[in-house]
Image (cartoon, rainbow, N blue to C red):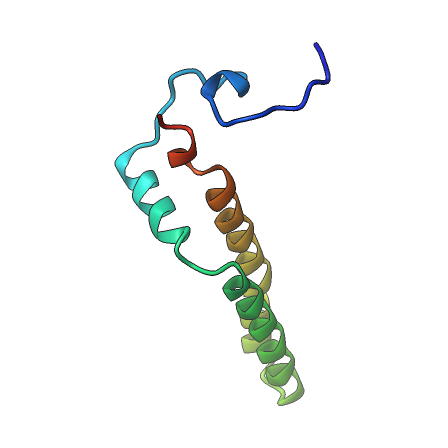
Length: 94
């Protein structure tokens, strides 16, 4: 195996990908997700952290835990958003 960098998005450059195509649902989700700005997810995660802190200070411990647990979810959605923009299924077609 060589250490040559991958160039392009042809399916031959990704081992195991073969002739795989995304389904209608996945493609639709990717198209809609790619329209969202990436910093939206960072702001949502920050708001979750600040909201959780505010609830904790005001004595609403259970609500603070619930809201605070959304921060990693928003960050993960942000990673998904970035992956879709960089290497979504439409990048492989054609």
